[in-house]
Image (cartoon, rainbow, N blue to C red; front, side, top):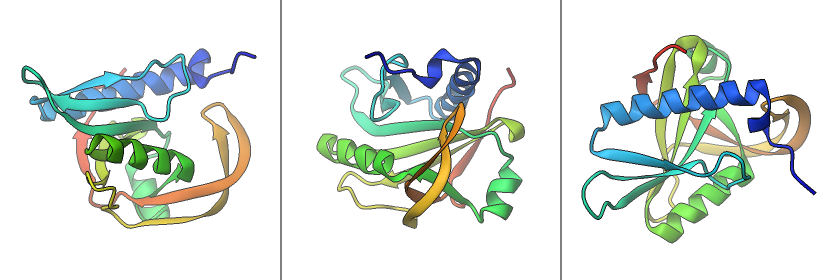
Length: 168
Protein backbone atom coordinates (compact mmCIF):
# COMPACT_ATOMS: atom_id res chain seq x y z
CA UNK A 1 0.00 0.00 0.00
CA UNK A 2 1.37 3.41 -1.00
CA UNK A 3 1.78 5.87 1.90
CA UNK A 4 0.24 9.32 1.37
CA UNK A 5 2.95 11.87 2.09
CA UNK A 6 2.56 15.56 2.90
CA UNK A 7 4.87 16.32 -0.03
CA UNK A 8 2.01 15.43 -2.37
CA UNK A 9 -0.25 18.30 -1.20
CA UNK A 10 -0.11 22.07 -1.79
CA UNK A 11 0.60 22.78 1.90
CA UNK A 12 3.29 20.10 1.91
CA UNK A 13 4.91 21.66 -1.16
CA UNK A 14 4.84 25.08 0.52
CA UNK A 15 6.44 23.67 3.67
CA UNK A 16 9.22 22.10 1.58
CA UNK A 17 9.87 25.38 -0.26
CA UNK A 18 10.22 27.20 3.07
CA UNK A 19 12.36 24.41 4.53
CA UNK A 20 14.75 24.76 1.59
CA UNK A 21 14.85 28.54 2.05
CA UNK A 22 15.75 28.01 5.69
CA UNK A 23 18.44 25.49 4.81
CA UNK A 24 19.83 27.87 2.18
CA UNK A 25 19.96 30.73 4.70
CA UNK A 26 21.94 28.47 7.05
CA UNK A 27 24.28 27.35 4.24
CA UNK A 28 24.86 30.90 2.97
CA UNK A 29 26.05 31.85 6.46
CA UNK A 30 28.22 28.70 6.58
CA UNK A 31 29.81 28.49 3.10
CA UNK A 32 32.15 25.70 4.19
CA UNK A 33 29.12 23.38 4.56
CA UNK A 34 26.80 21.62 2.09
CA UNK A 35 23.51 19.74 2.44
CA UNK A 36 22.33 16.59 0.74
CA UNK A 37 18.62 15.92 1.20
CA UNK A 38 16.81 12.65 1.65
CA UNK A 39 14.22 11.81 -1.02
CA UNK A 40 11.12 13.91 -0.30
CA UNK A 41 8.96 11.20 -1.89
CA UNK A 42 9.95 8.61 0.72
CA UNK A 43 9.40 8.62 4.49
CA UNK A 44 12.92 9.09 5.88
CA UNK A 45 14.01 9.34 9.51
CA UNK A 46 15.79 12.66 8.83
CA UNK A 47 15.75 15.33 6.13
CA UNK A 48 19.42 15.35 5.22
CA UNK A 49 23.11 15.26 5.96
CA UNK A 50 25.33 18.32 6.33
CA UNK A 51 28.94 17.85 5.28
CA UNK A 52 32.08 19.92 4.67
CA UNK A 53 32.44 21.34 1.17
CA UNK A 54 36.04 20.28 0.64
CA UNK A 55 37.24 17.34 -1.43
CA UNK A 56 36.45 14.14 0.46
CA UNK A 57 34.02 16.13 2.64
CA UNK A 58 33.30 15.01 6.18
CA UNK A 59 29.81 14.47 7.61
CA UNK A 60 29.20 17.15 10.23
CA UNK A 61 25.54 16.65 11.13
CA UNK A 62 22.33 14.79 10.51
CA UNK A 63 19.58 17.38 10.08
CA UNK A 64 15.82 17.61 10.52
CA UNK A 65 14.23 20.66 8.85
CA UNK A 66 10.73 21.73 9.82
CA UNK A 67 8.51 24.58 8.69
CA UNK A 68 6.12 25.95 11.30
CA UNK A 69 3.58 28.61 10.43
CA UNK A 70 4.03 30.79 13.51
CA UNK A 71 6.04 33.89 14.30
CA UNK A 72 9.30 33.99 16.20
CA UNK A 73 7.53 36.10 18.85
CA UNK A 74 4.85 33.42 19.31
CA UNK A 75 7.52 30.71 19.70
CA UNK A 76 9.57 32.74 22.17
CA UNK A 77 6.74 34.32 24.14
CA UNK A 78 3.72 31.99 24.03
CA UNK A 79 5.79 28.78 24.00
CA UNK A 80 8.78 30.12 25.98
CA UNK A 81 11.12 29.10 23.15
CA UNK A 82 10.12 25.44 23.46
CA UNK A 83 9.60 23.83 20.05
CA UNK A 84 7.63 20.61 19.91
CA UNK A 85 8.99 17.70 17.84
CA UNK A 86 7.74 14.13 17.71
CA UNK A 87 9.97 12.32 20.23
CA UNK A 88 10.47 9.32 17.96
CA UNK A 89 11.83 11.74 15.33
CA UNK A 90 14.27 13.11 17.92
CA UNK A 91 15.35 9.63 19.01
CA UNK A 92 15.87 8.42 15.42
CA UNK A 93 17.85 11.55 14.53
CA UNK A 94 20.10 11.26 17.58
CA UNK A 95 20.63 7.52 16.96
CA UNK A 96 21.54 8.04 13.29
CA UNK A 97 23.91 10.88 14.18
CA UNK A 98 25.53 8.75 16.87
CA UNK A 99 26.04 5.90 14.41
CA UNK A 100 27.76 8.37 12.05
CA UNK A 101 29.70 10.02 14.93
CA UNK A 102 28.32 13.47 14.17
CA UNK A 103 25.83 15.96 15.59
CA UNK A 104 22.07 15.94 15.19
CA UNK A 105 20.72 19.38 14.43
CA UNK A 106 17.39 20.94 13.61
CA UNK A 107 16.53 23.87 11.40
CA UNK A 108 13.17 25.37 12.29
CA UNK A 109 11.81 27.68 9.61
CA UNK A 110 9.25 30.34 10.56
CA UNK A 111 7.90 31.85 7.30
CA UNK A 112 5.81 34.51 9.06
CA UNK A 113 9.02 35.97 10.53
CA UNK A 114 11.17 35.08 7.49
CA UNK A 115 13.67 33.42 9.79
CA UNK A 116 15.31 30.04 10.27
CA UNK A 117 16.55 28.86 13.65
CA UNK A 118 19.40 26.35 13.70
CA UNK A 119 20.10 24.39 16.87
CA UNK A 120 22.51 21.52 17.51
CA UNK A 121 20.42 19.02 19.49
CA UNK A 122 23.01 16.33 20.21
CA UNK A 123 26.76 16.04 19.90
CA UNK A 124 28.72 13.24 18.27
CA UNK A 125 28.43 11.16 21.45
CA UNK A 126 24.62 11.36 21.45
CA UNK A 127 24.49 13.76 24.42
CA UNK A 128 21.66 16.30 24.24
CA UNK A 129 22.85 19.90 24.12
CA UNK A 130 19.81 22.09 24.80
CA UNK A 131 17.27 21.30 27.45
CA UNK A 132 14.85 18.71 26.10
CA UNK A 133 11.76 17.65 28.03
CA UNK A 134 9.43 14.90 26.89
CA UNK A 135 5.76 14.29 27.53
CA UNK A 136 2.50 13.20 25.97
CA UNK A 137 0.60 15.75 23.91
CA UNK A 138 -2.18 15.99 21.38
CA UNK A 139 -0.67 17.58 18.30
CA UNK A 140 -1.34 18.14 14.66
CA UNK A 141 -0.79 14.75 13.02
CA UNK A 142 0.84 16.06 9.83
CA UNK A 143 1.49 19.28 7.95
CA UNK A 144 -1.97 18.83 6.45
CA UNK A 145 -3.84 18.50 9.73
CA UNK A 146 -5.53 15.84 11.80
CA UNK A 147 -4.63 15.13 15.40
CA UNK A 148 -2.40 12.60 17.10
CA UNK A 149 -1.74 11.81 20.76
CA UNK A 150 1.93 10.94 21.05
CA UNK A 151 5.13 11.40 22.97
CA UNK A 152 6.78 14.67 22.06
CA UNK A 153 10.06 16.38 22.80
CA UNK A 154 10.13 20.05 23.78
CA UNK A 155 13.40 21.43 22.43
CA UNK A 156 14.75 24.67 23.88
CA UNK A 157 15.30 26.98 20.88
CA UNK A 158 16.10 30.13 22.88
CA UNK A 159 19.83 29.90 22.05
CA UNK A 160 19.38 28.78 18.44
CA UNK A 161 21.26 30.76 15.81
CA UNK A 162 19.00 32.87 13.63
CA UNK A 163 19.25 33.23 9.84
CA UNK A 164 17.13 35.51 7.64
CA UNK A 165 15.30 33.68 4.87
CA UNK A 166 14.34 35.02 1.47
CA UNK A 167 10.69 35.50 0.52
CA UNK A 168 8.89 33.13 -1.83
